[in-house]
Length: 208
View 1 (tube, rainbow, N blue to C red):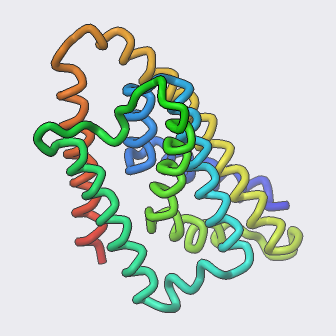
View 2 (spheres, rainbow, N blue to C red; view 1 turned 30 degrees about the vertical axis):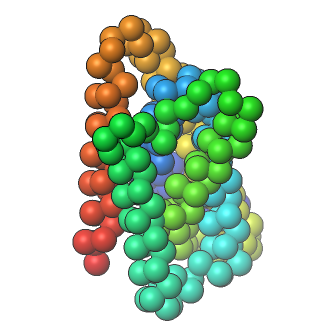
């Protein structure tokens, strides 16, 4: 078990990261606005599963390949940027609609929401770096096995993100309910979301 001082510092760091806007948060907000709180929480489950995958990879050393083999990290980075650009184009193209805007009556919609949440996390290289570069700094030798400490820290991060995500989904859904009667609302939401996703894509490509 990590030391209390290390846990406190870790909580402060991951809380700051959790409230920083990124592709995952934009996806969660957009889905909650377009389809409601339940869809937002379903997407949050997909995102959490993506973090679980990275946590397991970090715990068993697999994620280290992303830094040991620069081309592997670059491949993930460009794939993520391409995915974000695709979502941005779907939102702003003439006659198009946001990929986060869907019918509430589609039987397969829940699966698609979940999968998109998962893919958004998996193709976010910062998620990999979080578990590879950040977690080891809070692992304290002599406080138990490195594996168990990594899993504990990872689960804390996932739990915090899920808790914060539920609050965000509920808030965004409530806001959407009040703005739904405005015809220009969905158009504005599409362009705002598309612009943000495009900006994140450019940032991923230009980062060293």
